[in-house]
Structures are given as C-alpha cells and as structure tokens.
Image 1: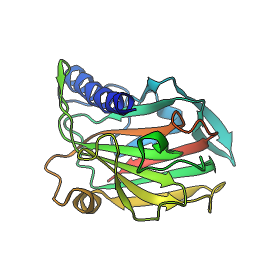
Image 2 (image 1 turned 120 degrees about the horizontal axis):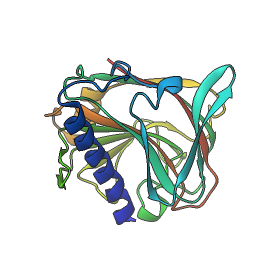
Image 3 (image 1 turned 120 degrees about the vertical axis):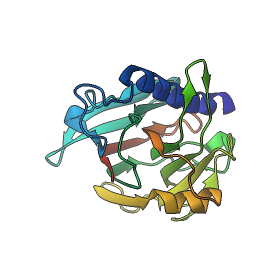
Image 4 (image 1 turned 60 degrees about the horizontal axis):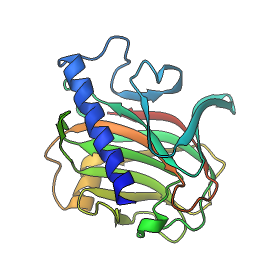
Length: 229
C-alpha cells in the first residue's frame, strides 16, 4: 500500500535527522568507519536500527558457510534495517555488498502495487533529510533481486512513489540463488540512468529490506556486507 511504502521512506528520513542532531557533525562513539556500512558482528554499534512498516520481517544473525550474515525471512509483513551516515562521512560514490537469495516470491511484480515485494534489496537515499518535525523526501535508489519477469539492468519506477524511488534490477530470477554473490555499483552513474541527472546531494542513509506483505509468499535472504568508497 502507498501508506506503507511512504512510511518506510519517512522513517529512513526521520532516522537521518535523529543521527544528524545527536552526532553534531561527528561520527557516533563506537561506530566503525562509514566506508564499512555493514559488518555483521558490529551492526548494532554501527547504528543499524529495525523499523517495521507493515507487520514485520524477521531478521536474525546466522552462521552459514563459515560466514556471519543477517538473515531476513518474510512473515507476511514488511520491515527493514536502517543506517544513517554522519554529516561529515566521506562521500559514498561506489557501493558494494554481499547477499544470498534462498527463496524468491514467484508472483512479485515491481510494476504493480499489489505485487511490490522484494526478496533482497538495498535502499540508498541521496540528500539531507531535514528536520524531525518535517522530514524531506529525497531521491532514492533501490537495488533489487527480482523475479524473472524483469530483466537485469531494468530501471522500474516504484508504483507508489514513481518520481522519488527507482528500482534497479541487479539480478532477476532464481538462477544463482543459494550462492554468496558480491555486487558493485557506481552510484552516480546509476542515479543518472534512473533520474536523468546527476545527484545533487550525497548519500545520507542506507537500508536493507525484504518483504512479502503483498504476495504473502515465502521469502528468505541473507545479507553479509555493505561497503561504500
């Protein structure tokens, strides 16, 4: 639903405000450098927070193949883990991560409001989120692993917020599921392809997000690392 998706973006923005106010331009004590956005043993100290959007998605730390990862399991809802970047963080121009898909919702369709579920996705928000009392909506990229009805490289406007959020299909279909895969993206190049212009503001927040509130179909995915440079 539009309300649910909009709420996620607002929560991302509001969390960004809180971080900006509390840090006063400095990295919070105990956080690892912003270039290492997600290292599983340190994810709490790094400032990751869980936000339910509709119901919830179950997240837990697991050990698999001698790796520590955050496993996301859909339970008929939607929720994400969110981290903001301090105001003085180095510019994030390239993003890389490691993920692994276990189960993909077969009827998910990113072009439809009633099919807008993602097995694995990374949100990247560009811009200052403003004040807590009046969060500002900013351009957002969402990197996704979609069903085979989409193609790798597709750019799909989110059906709820088409001018604000653009999906970029990194992988499509069940092929390569069950494997740890490393992805790397040029954020400025992807932003230009998605929005037709250069980004005007730096990356200020990121999130990992798995949901199945629309399809209700089982979904499981794992996130291991997230880095920017």
